[in-house]
View 1 (tube, rainbow, N blue to C red):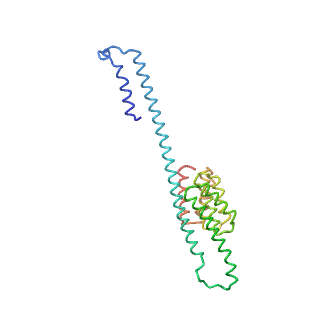
View 2: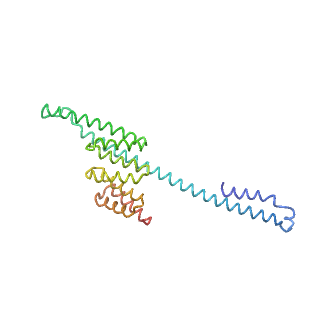
View 3: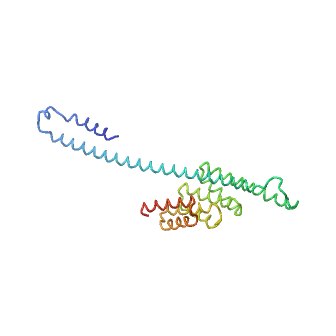
Length: 244
């Protein structure tokens, strides 16, 4: 109910209180004065409730926008990662008809090629769940992939998406653990920079301000003039503005 409607309701309620005696300047009835005071009190209560409702709506709107922003960031990151994976897949497939040193090496290479194809199939199945928004199932499948293929060229990618699957559903404690595993276990991976940035983000969400600041500064120092460094700088600026 808007404020103008509230006043209209009160005005209509007060009409019966008007009387010819009041028009003639007769003293107001104490009962009517009490009724008027009660109505004014109710009006104030309604206005307070209205302000409270507006506050709740603003909070919900903010949360919805935050979720939309998080989804947009995730989808953009997924697209970028998928492009990287596709490029890696193209460069790692041997050219057809390439020179081979002998018959024996060709026979030995058949099994690894089949293994890589199987790994890629398992990875793609988990990634499809991620793109569908089935984050719990995707995280489980990626975790199974890492356990089954710890030495796979895709293991670092899979570990990153385990962390991302937890991060997007705001399980920051689990995400922190998974991103840390990637940063420590695959220091030379192309995913390490993003994983380290997400470590800082998780620490921020967990209110570990000192650790978050240290991690974000580490990102800037290790990866200067990169998108992750700029993201770290933006988060540090946000923390400063918030007085963290």
